[in-house]
Structures are given as structure tokens and as C-alpha cells.
Image 1: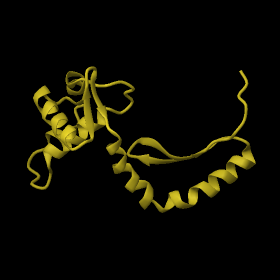
Image 2: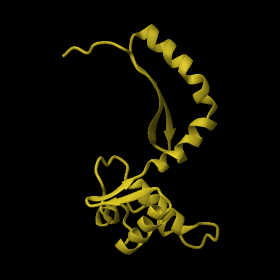
Image 3: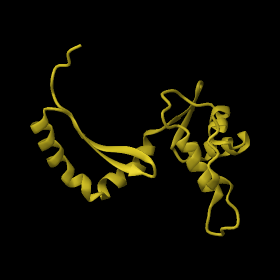
Image 4: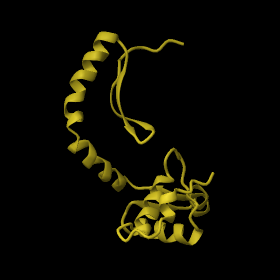
Length: 135
């Protein structure tokens, strides 16, 4: 499952930092992974060479964003600090809970707030209904 993000192979733009793009691509390879990832798996997911992946993982580990275990690499809690700024700076998130709770109460169902990120839908807030689930 090679990702091969075209931005990783961009050339000619003096403002584009390929090394930074590669590091972010390595971090992105952890999406939807419930277990540790080994360097060869990350290499396959990103299309980056194992040597590049190893250097990125080393740097990310030194900075505290990933840690190495026997069964692969894992994200560290420090990675959450990157998303916290988004949540704190987004004015929509300061008013959303009131409206989500109101919709939840009126509908009797859980209610979520989502935004588009390119072509992806990303849920950024939720108000969960409290009820017993029947099967």
C-alpha cells in the first residue's frame, strides 16, 4: 500500500522543505494503526526509502514524538500538542458544544461536528447521548 505523496518528490521550489515533508509523511503513516509500526512498513506506506524512514524516525524519537519498542514505533503523547493548538485557536469549537448539546437533546441522538480536510471528513466535536443500547 504505497502512498507516494507527489509533494515528497517536488523539485525546483526553493521554499519547499522536502525533509520536513518526509517527516510529516512518516508521522501520517501512523493513521489508523492500532499497533506499532516497523520501519519497513512505514517505508511501504509512504514510498520513502528505508534509510530516509530510519532517519526520520530517529529525529522524531529524539524530539519526543515517537518511541521505539520491540514491536515497532509508536506515537508519543507529545504529538497531541500539535493538535491542541488547532482546538484552542478554532472559534467554532468554543461555540459548538452549546449547539451540539441542543441538537442532542432535541433529537435524542448523539451529535457530531465535522469539517472537510481536503476530501476527508474529520470529526472535531461530539455530544454523546446517554442511553442504554439494545441489541
